[in-house]
Image 1 (spheres, rainbow, N blue to C red):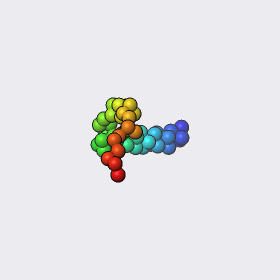
Image 2: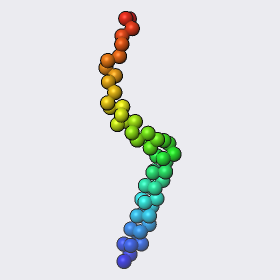
Image 3: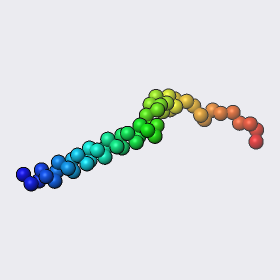
Image 4: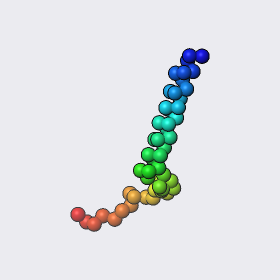
Length: 53
């Protein structure tokens, strides 16, 4: 029973930490363009023109 007095606050702290990390990721723009990376992998950047240098 005394273990619950330790485990419940630890679980609440870790849950709050995860929630804070999620809100930080949303605020910093991590989820702005979820389809951008999927489309960017299909672009062929190797065929760019040389400008003769």
